[in-house]
Image 1: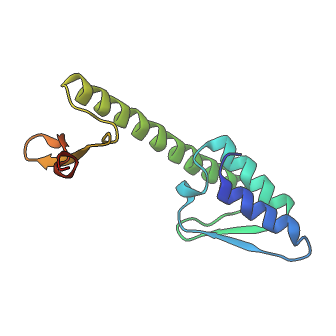
Image 2: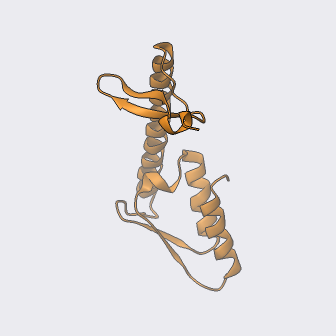
Length: 129
């Protein structure tokens, strides 16, 4: 598990085993960014006796509820992966057109130019001595 916030939350729950907690999440897609991780995280909360409430989804301990939850988690993972692919494709295309797509190096800054987007320019402050 690489999400430090979730690790901290689970450690907090572990430190207080005799207290029943409810974890509130605002969006099911933000709970976990991967279907397997979602299921593992749900089990981790369940093992600790903590329940999860979501503002845009109602968790149900029924076969149908678990199915819908899995589908929603998979949909979130799909959207994340599609977005990652789209960003990579756009960055690659921009690089092929000769644009710099990485953070501005020291002495340069980005300037927004109509029709081109952000263009790397020498920082005026760097030229002064």
